[in-house]
Length: 257
Image (tube, rainbow, N blue to C red; front, side, top):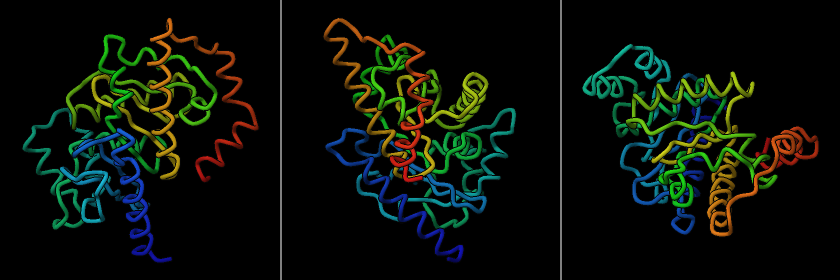
């Protein structure tokens, strides 16, 4: 398969993933909320264009950008909003494409430094009910059932609320570094307080699975608080489930890898 066909296949799969995340009945994203991206394998990546809606998006709702341009902006000590706007225009492979999402910096960091090939970001209602509370991401620091460990990892990465866009990209980079130092691996799920959730996957299927399981996790958490509070698994149990060979096999089957 030539590069042009590879590109088309990646974009088609990204459209399918985006529409799955944007299904109204799932309450993961409404209107123009959320965004998705995918590594194109040639130093570029596809990202949802600003203002596109995940539930109804087509191939025209994405922009192809050069990773090196975005990384160059992230390497600067400071950058103004007009400089960001000009930099994003220069990063586009095709100037006719629509302007990429403001979250391009977060996506670039997760793709280039987070070990992911596919990214999904939503403002899931159930998750934000918790992230927008006084507890923030704290309830997600413990696990309640094995499936969340298998799909979402031993623990989520967490970002306090920061300004979306360039500043958020820098904060995500710092948190990925902290997480790798603590856990010796990259996270599968990133929680942004007062904002939403990010799934970092190797396949579109893995991104969707993480999002759906994170939604279930949040719903179960909310239910436990109505009945006296959550009863978390011990860290020993969490690590045991994470390292079991049968669970690793199930994890690989679920991600399609």
